[in-house]
Image (tube, rainbow, N blue to C red; front, side):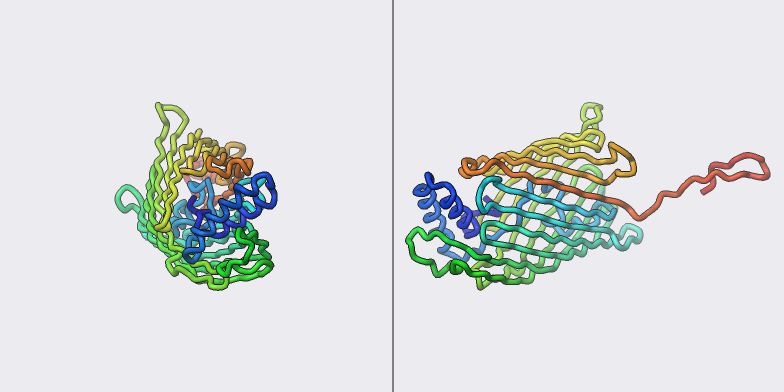
Length: 352
């Protein structure tokens, strides 16, 4: 699975934890750990991946810096994910991002964005922060074309690991039990994003520096992301829109495909399904609080529940993900003021 695949020895810690907690599966899981070790340690563990989020359609900035400013507003997004609940050492992720246009002139726009996240899995702790800068050419064809880059850092560390070695002997390729190590690396990314009122498409490349985290024997793999989506407005003349989204992720050794379909009612409520190949089927629900009061328009909440479809389904009760986003504009609409017209002795409502 992309993001938690066999070359990432973080996956090994989780399997080791299962061996500790599920004694009846000890022999079977030891075989799996052993085979994973053989695969993972034949090369440097270079497939350490980014955190995985089911609501990728609400979380584009982390994958594509060209997305910054796409809503022509100041947007702040928070995401929390609790993966494989009940699985000791399972991944836990949290993200905070924000983006906003900072300069507009004619059809030209410059926007900035900030993304920071935490990702814990087993004994491994990952932190990252990236700042994005985007140039957008508006009204280029039917939509807007943006080119963006981001720069920042990644930090990967191991905190007090307790290994189970299938051979009974320590492995020189793995940090020693009880050690605490941290490595920082420079991070660069590029992205192109095109969007209209009804569809979007993007391509991006992240972790272009391929940073080496030598103390923990990990090399950060370069990633590519392909995304796209379309909104079919007012299906059959109703108040419902249909919104499919797709995401393809690859680090050139493996690939993952996510497909999503949401039904949206009056732009206030949405619900749908997401399928992640060989991993999970997810239920998505969300709403815009503007349905309650216009003053809260732009404040959105989303929730997804993943049902695991891989062999790990026997060891967890699913994954939970919560999204909170608020978008607002600093531009104030002109207010119509009633003024008394002395000449005509009445109110003129057309003055601003």
